[in-house]
Image 1 (tube, one colour):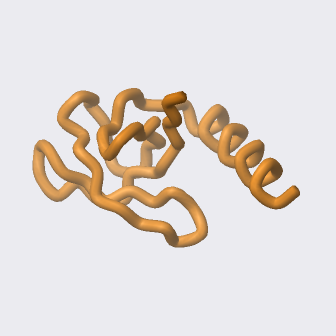
Image 2 (spheres, rainbow, N blue to C red):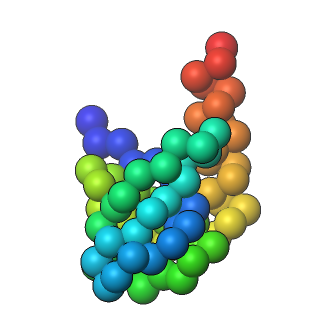
Length: 72
């Protein structure tokens, strides 16, 4: 099974690397070379690669569902 998680793009470091926030202060570097994204947008991240730009409302709903599942 594959799993992709929404994350907010905090800072682009260059054309390839960016710092993203997965929530609760969990920050990671990811590769953004597959998408055209700007700081502040939400990305769908899989295996260290941003694979899609998400609408903010969709990303927040997905994060809410994950939070609900993990805190049951």
